[in-house]
Length: 67
Image 1 (tube, rainbow, N blue to C red):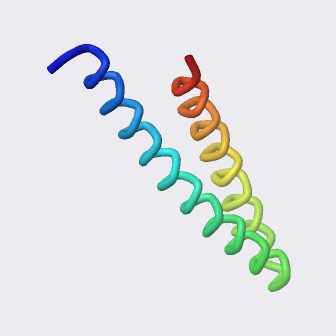
Image 2 (image 1 turned 90 degrees about the horizontal axis):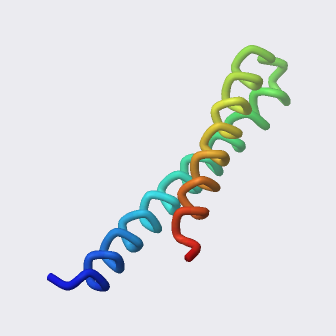
């Protein structure tokens, strides 16, 4: 396997991780919004914080993809 193929495979794997993280983040934002509307502040803040952490991790992965 050449270096360029290996790099392409790792880039594809990172992109898949980013897509999965973004899907989880959208789900958590939805849960947080519903929790705020239901006046469940503890659940709302917990899910909002986890969503922000997932966003930061996804941003770091995307930064890895840039040359």
